[in-house]
Image (cartoon, rainbow, N blue to C red; front, side):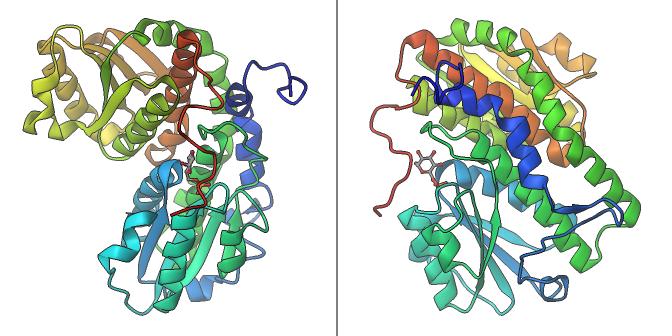
Length: 369
Ligand code: G6P
């Protein structure tokens, strides 16, 4: 087992560090650099058929569900197709309304999650085409779907998912651009610029990983907290949810992720002197609003770590600690913003002496409903 960990202390740490390579693998063979477009050579969903898609459901569980939340933003923004994201275990029971030309996307690292499989079967029964985004070729979900985008992140052993999540995000970025090509919603220059920024992401992740030590210090400072909060807006809210889940899974510290604008509708009552808040602020459009939310919690005594883009000087002044991520398109910041959150949960778990790779009560793959 030690040999398989490649010198890392835990599988989770190894998998966090494998992300640059995993992300490159997700992109390999899917970008035509001459034409500056996305290609999916094995997909039956041709651009001609993708053009007809009018509605998308995304179904998934856990971390894959969080990737789906990002997928919704990306597809709606790039391809202008309305998307709903459902927790797979809820999907069937809420009787979703299927209309013609609906595509259902099932996201699953293992390809074996029973609820996700059941949700996609329900979609099929209702006449929807099903596209799977999975890390396991030949898994039940891959076999049952009409089409598969494999994430090619390599085997993920640690229960807490890391590289599978970020490679699912890359799959959604590629798919969003592909659907935009089909719909004609992106001009060639914007597309070329997005592809250029997309291919820069693995090196940018690597850059963040080289500064992991700073994050380790922060993690050690929160290990004795009873609860903490993650706040963010838009895509950052979705990333916050993943950060909060990660921390709960392996540190057992209670945390919640809030859409920062919702704070004043209740959560602010929980903020007191010394409450720790992790604020994600990577979205230029929402930057001012985030600064005012940070000011709100700080005025009540919160101690805030801000995660923001390199160059956002104003935010530095509003927070107690800051973690900088490299500049990229606003749609792609999630892949970078989640890295410090993965490291925070990892180092907190290590500092507490927990079983990082095998957290209590949890399984890597849940094959019962
Ligand atoms: C379990 C794992 C999570 C994972 C979820 C969905 O709860 O512990 O890490 O996100 O299942 O798994 P899947 O394989 O469908 O992505």
